[in-house]
Length: 116
Image (tube, one colour):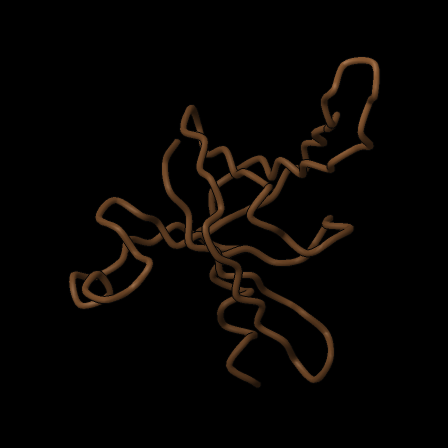
């Protein structure tokens, strides 16, 4: 057993339902002067954790940020800072993405998120 297996099992056993909102940027529209975008929703299961106070000083982590952990199951692309995660009625912006890999395959994403 490797260190990723227990994380995947914990997500399966203790995770909660969430929506992963993938935003893709379109092309520039000369008529409107704007760049279009579209959002696709993917149902995922996540573990949610807070950060400890020692994570706060001298980092990008702010008080109230949440660590969201989920598998790549159902995702067609890597999460980016343009994407969002909704848990219940709370929508979170992704601040940073840390993929966890087994050999060359990404199995789990750990995202720093912030309430909008």
